[in-house]
Amino acid sequence: MSNKSNYDLGIDVSEIKNHAQYRECWKKLGRLEIKMIEKHEECKHSLGDTFVYETPYARPVGVCPALLHVLDLYTWRAVFGFPSWNPDDRRVHKLHCPDPQGTVWELRKIED
Image (tube, rainbow, N blue to C red):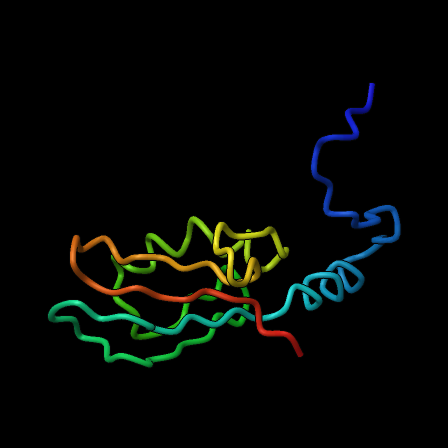
């Protein structure tokens, strides 16, 4: 029995017959960008720093490991367009680093 209230990515997986077709599907995911928009205390990053994920699995080099841990919880949501709680722009996830007074970052899918 189907429950129409459940979310579905709407990907027709029946069309994926081989690895090459799978890779083409993977390429459609797109890239993600993170950007520091607030800084409240000492941090190795600077306000405005921007990094790119080539895929949700390909973490950007040089980003604080603690911040990456938080971002990991949201990369798949952002790449698939799941809405954020940000009322100004539901495509942008605003995330705080684990430090209680640290930094705030925007995570968004890069629209090509």
